[in-house]
Image 1 (cartoon, helix red, strand yellow):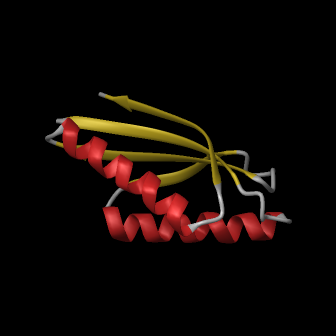
Image 2 (cartoon, helix red, strand yellow):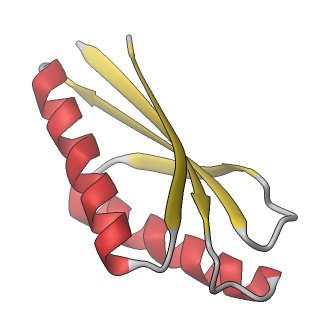
Length: 93
């Protein structure tokens, strides 16, 4: 079994308050859970209104499947939300 963990550090330039940021984060989390059947949390920067850190975990029998899903997740986020990627880290166990 392969467990993949991806940490995304994002910058939401259009966010002008914590309320705006929480709306973006809640929407991302809900849509990703439904579309990709993954576990996701906001893991840091809860008190900063333009920084977002999301940690995503997925288990599978295939590392390639996890890699492909992570790539689809990145593409989905950046095509659907006004955020910029600052850093991405992926680990497999």
